[in-house]
Image (tube, rainbow, N blue to C red):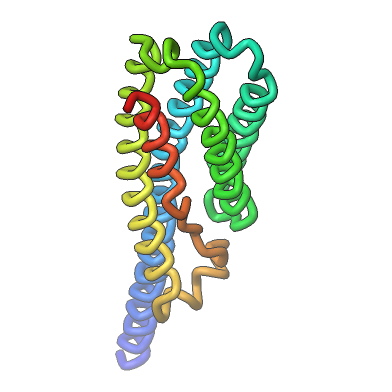
Length: 202
């Protein structure tokens, strides 16, 4: 009888441990999925912003025929940020990909700064209905990016804190969750880029 009780007790303990470990694994999967989905929301808005900037450049071409270098700089920076966004979307936990995304954002900001300076020489373009509409859409998109980025960073913190807590940290590496999720910080670049188009219409 004592032998049976001992066996049942051992089986119960093992069962509880298995359930406990499975629960840790499931939560790691859930939290990782949440922050990945959070980054997808950022990616959608970043790509929309890039489309709007492309439309902005297209609208400016017929007015800024002699500013090919400036327009090309924006186009190239836009392309670089698109590639960086796609790379980061496939693996938000890749620190290198996220750093490239942030630096690509800075490059686009710089190109847009040059573009906006040149725009001062084209009052008709600045006053066009198309440019004003694009500016409004950019403002809305920038606000969505800011909100999505904050939500994503909150989910990253949630995942990292859970992963690093004891005893979860023991199992995280075993289950393939060793890498930290990466915050997305633009150092206010998004806000500055958002303000630039509005300056065109002052």
